[in-house]
Amino acid sequence: MTAAGGAKIRTGELVVFLKPVAVAPAVVRRDGRVQAGGHPADHARLGVIGQQLDEMAGQPGVIDAVAAQTVPRGKVEGTARRSMTMAAALRAVLLMGLMPDAGYGEILAALFGDLALVPWHVPFAVPAGTVLATWRDAAGPEPALLLQDMVLKASGAEHQDHDYRAIQAGDLHLGSIDGSVTRMPGTPGEPGGVRVDRDRG
Image (tube, rainbow, N blue to C red; front, side):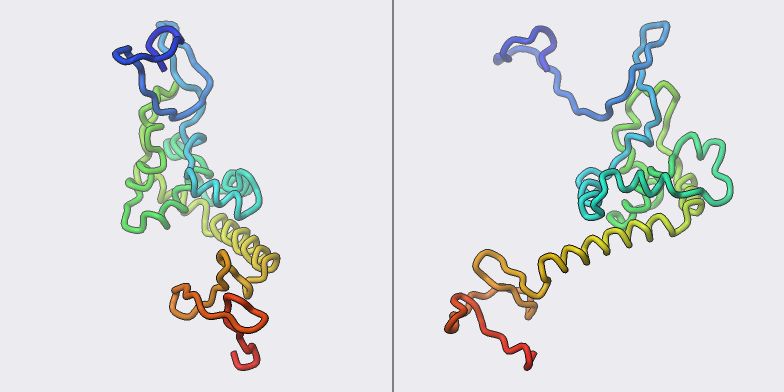
C-alpha cells in the first residue's frame, strides 16, 4: 500500500510492502500501542497441506474438529497450556511427516513462523521442544489415526466413484508397468490404446 493517499502509484513514490501474518482483534493500550488479541496457536496453519487435508477428508477445518474431540491425557497445564493448543500440537505432529530430520524445536519454529513477530497482547515466544513432547504424549495416537482413517476412507470412496482400474490421462490409458506412459498403436475397436486380456492378467 502507499504510505499516504490512494492515488495510482507512480515511479519514485514511497510504498510499504506488507506480508499478511494474522487477522486478529486489536487491543489498544493506554500508551497507544496496538497489539493483537487472541492466541497465536489459533492462527497457526499448514497452508496448502491443510487445505488439501480438508478436501480429502471432505470436512473444512478437519484438524480443528478432531482436536476439539481430543481429551488430553494426564495434565497439560501451566506454561505448556499457555503456549500451545491441541490443534496446534496436532498440526505440529503432521508437520513432522514433512520435516523428518527436524527436531521438535524446528517443527514449532516452522509452524508458528512469523506469528512469533506479531505484538500479541500476551507475551509470546515459540514453545520449546519439550512443550511439544508433552502435548504429543497428552494427545496420544488417536487424533492422527482418526485423520488417517478419514483420508483413507475418502480416498477409497474416490476410487469407487472413478474406478481405479480405468485411469486415463488425456487420450492415453495408463498402466503400471515401469512408471512411464507410452503411446501404443491402436487395435480394432480401441484406437490409441492396447487391448488387454483380463483373463490372462
